[in-house]
Image (cartoon, rainbow, N blue to C red; front, side, top):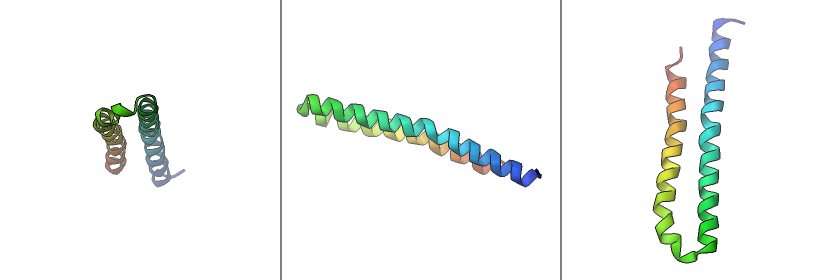
Amino acid sequence: MDHASIVALAKAFTMGIGTIGPGLAIGRLVAKAMEAIGRNPESADKLFVPMLLGAAFAEAIAIYALVVVFTLK
């Protein structure tokens, strides 16, 4: 294996690992919020903003992984 293919493999691995966690976190976050709203529909207004903030913070982790990939040479 030459250097370019090793770097490409490292980039793919970094993006794969860096997006699994946020993807699972966002899925679980939204599922639990929908479950809570299903149990208590009046709580929808109180849950919506924290759910979006949590999803945004989890998505930021995936963006950090993307930044790391672009910094690999």
